[in-house]
Image 1: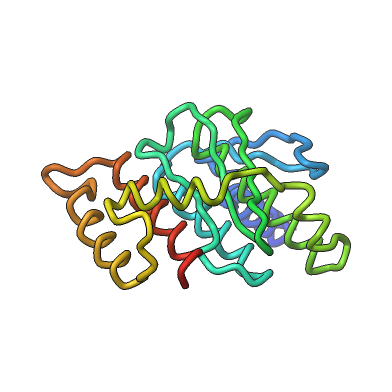
Image 2: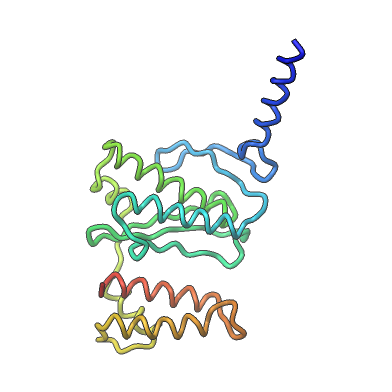
Length: 205
């Protein structure tokens, strides 16, 4: 009896230490895009977890053949800020997009975005949904030519530049100058430069 009691105590201690019972998270259930999702509400390490969720989006979409060059996940400088989170990705010439804001803070909204994409990709892999279904569910009309023009303007290169090496060289110079860790760094400008570079890499590589 004593042995059994000790085992039960040990079991409950281990159970409490699992992420679902950690003091660092709360959870609530929501149905989003047809998926029942336990929304994890983060209690600390907000910036680090935002990066983890971003990487999870990259990892999920890589399973269906998309490299990071075809995926854009904007990060907030302050992850606990109350604002929406989003991801944009490109498949077969289609621009796909998903954003979420009902969880409140950016880090929690980004968790939802990562989870929805993960579950959608699992359905494709398990042949419960086709790529065309996926495209239809997340497709967003966008002026690609306008985006490319604006990307060249952001990087300060000629409108007819088609040399990826020239694009990369200019990107590196601007990114170094505007990096948030630099004395004259600008977080928003740094994000815009990175987004512009991704747009042109998709076009030119």
